[in-house]
Image 1 (cartoon, rainbow, N blue to C red):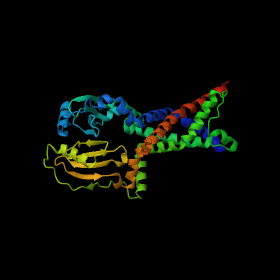
Image 2 (tube, rainbow, N blue to C red):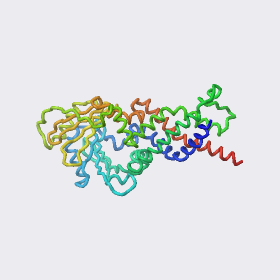
Image 3 (cartoon, rainbow, N blue to C red):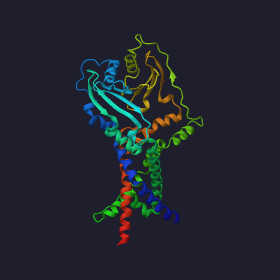
Image 4 (cartoon, rainbow, N blue to C red):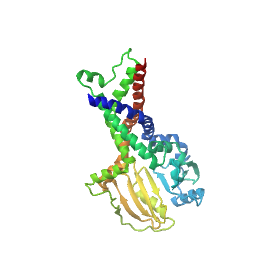
Amino acid sequence: MKLRKILIPVHLWIGILSGVVVIVLGLTGCVLVFVDEIKPLVYADRMEVSSVSGVQLPLQDMMHKAQDIWGKEKQVSALEIYNDPGKTWHFRAYQEDNNDGKWYWNEKKYYESLFMDPYTGKLVFHEQSEFEFFRVILYLHWSLLLKTELGQPVVGVVTLLFVISLLTGLYLWWPKNKKARRVRFSFKWKDSTGLKRKNYDLHNVLGFYVFGLGLVIALTGMIWAFPVLDRGLQYLLNSGEGTAKKAMEPVVQSFPEKPGDSSLNFILTDIKKRYPKAEAYQFYFPNDSSSNVMVLARYERALKSVNARYDMISGQLMQTETFEEKNNGEKFSDMNYGIHTGSILGLPGKILAFLVSLISASLPITGFLIWYNKKRGKRK
């Protein structure tokens, strides 16, 4: 009984202190769960070509056209090519910035995207990606639009408070006897049931049903917010062997017949040949003097994706890395995003994550109303 008296104010004040941020994280999480399904619909004008006709231009030619648009001051940093011939090619240019600003916009000098038609080489859309709607939603969820080093600890602490709130809430909710259990697991509403009672039930019943998955989503989010958790977990999963990244397996391959300027064309042809069923191929170009380019053959099921390292001068495939080749710690890190968003279970998992995020966002609201109604009742 004494513990209950202690936990009631603890649960209340945790909810009041963290409530607004929990609402923000929950609602933005709802959007981000289905971002891959929403984007192609709302951005069809930039992601789809007007006509699929002829042969796609060589990658090297498309690189030159993109670079001509940006000029010498902004280098192509990344490129995404969908296997779907009806999609545009997505070029990115970004550069980090370490200024004294506090907002997430201060982390990069620039971040722009070009959506280009691979059949004509024409620009379809020029995007200022730092202000793109879904990226703003992502960073609102990631760091409350603050710089990562400032916002992530805040998000992590609030997420920890949410975990404590779930645990204390479960203890306070737990029925004392069989009679209490009959009314705790479902809504027993009648025509005469008042709004206060309905709000109370929404907070308690829904809170109970999201408890387990809410903990999973919160804890996987904390792994990003506190890198020390990620390192510690990897250390444990690797049986104390540390988190040193295992070198990718070298691949022996002959050089292309026409190295040099045509090597990027060869690399694209080669990665498509090796992984013809990949959803997309993502190129990450070096920002230094290195001649290596990292290419991700991305599958809809993320754990099937393959990392490949090519030499841009020769076109030679140097190394590859699959999920199966990683150590246990790296495997869990790769799985963390899928667990957090529910995508590891496919569409059913995403729907569950959406509902849990939505209900989690509602808990501070219904909890505040319970407290407010009690406080107002005492005044009368």
